[in-house]
Length: 290
Image (cartoon, rainbow, N blue to C red; front, top):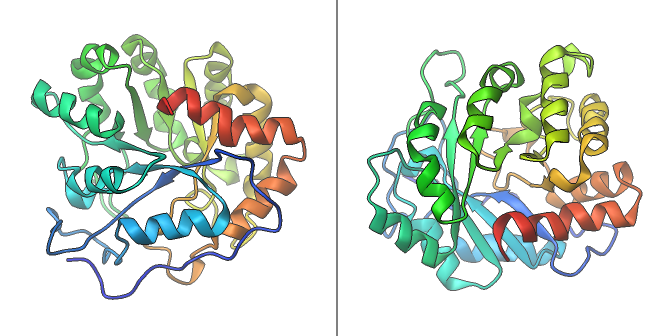
């Protein structure tokens, strides 16, 4: 069940976000009586219902947001759909395998769902995928149905997994969004062949990356070890970058970041106002159909 404590709420950043800025990666949980969890997870889900997510966006200056289906809810995006119905300026990414009915996909699309998420990540210390996950092997089976609706696929995996799966991604014919800075491994450096393969695919124009820092770096709170990767991704194709907070920060405990501080880092790392606007406004508008 969802926990009793609300997640960390942010301070405002030290700069004013552009109009229509979008946080492209966050989650909602609860209320538990309306949206009980489907899977027991290796973390306690926070109390983070739709109104609290909206408050988080407002505190830092986002007028738009994208909600991502967490594994705890399996293939039922009811909590996201409810959030989309409560507020303007939101889109969602659901989870489903190829057994999903077309009528469900159509209903989700009408609510504001714009893609499906696939997950190759395993439980910490284990070999099994997170509960509630759908692997990328289902992507080919679903590709034509996503394309019919103008949807994209989002994948969470490590950089080495992404490099091995690039041919699968290309073959889908879909826009593919890589979560969490493409799962880079800072110790390998930017010359890592797997990272270079992703950069090359970015230049082709069908691949997207979310600039979400906190899952790739343990150097809290400023994440300097991922700065070179951040710079290289933007340089490879700034038109295929979007930004995400990852609020409400599952499993991060004392390393839970402040969304406002993450935005200050983004402002520092991307000094060009035109590029910042592209990543925060123009690119999400294109990808999610705002």
